[in-house]
Image (cartoon, rainbow, N blue to C red; front, top):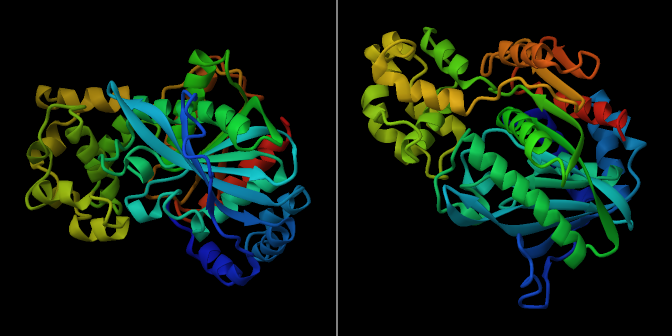
Length: 410
């Protein structure tokens, strides 16, 4: 997710308010031997109710919508990192994520949050659970949710593999398996809370795309195990074919990291047959794999690429992407990993900043229209444009709007 620097600076000033307690591993060397999904759990940090309210109160001076959740805070929050079993292209993989739970015993639904584009191993949720980027999300648990934040494959426990960026099948599978691991976490670790099968889904940017891909799968394939009460996707690149065509049709595009990230993942995992040298000019084609090693930030990667479309991409690719048989595998991969509209019975809120030049607002508008055309109710499937907000400034308002939307369905 594009970081909101104002919010981070604000939270940084509040760090002394956060009373840390030491981390501790479960003394049992193999407490999860009989589990299907959950492998390990470690307590990372604890926050008191007073800590959370103090931080949110001051944060509300910058983002007034934050004030709307202060009255909903019922407890402190305990944050755990976990590892769990999932599968990628037929091979078992150990994945990881964070689980934040209320400190007060009770029965709670799950809120699955999906973060936006990240290229740094050090910025993954479990690598930086005390990081200011994730604190606002963790605090949501204090309002009565069990909040989970997956690392995505290629980060955390699976950082040895390349991140399959915007690969729908593996993203959904890893998120579903983390949801299954929550049931085992409830039984083995958080024995004083009960986790229901009710889920709320939320994400921004890549996370908006992941949210909608996950919702479609949970609703159509896993309805016997999970009941999605509501979902909200912010500024997601839902139609990858449109994104690709749009970028190739521009003179400049400010975020070449996004397109190169897709190309690196799809090439690495043979999701299309074209070589990077068929799509990108040198020296960019040759340097792209090395840029996505988990050690370069998005800004650093952008600096090594080129915002001038004609210099970054092959001329043949620019002119022939949409029609040439040479690029059929690229078009197929983009279609296969896009989120199409469907007839959903789950309340959905789609949001997008009108000034977003990184991910085009029309993507959210079109997905909303397609879902209505497929049979989703216009009463419960909503699109809200966030006037004047760009990709960065839209992140926190989208999160706050999603939480307010969820209140109607709790």
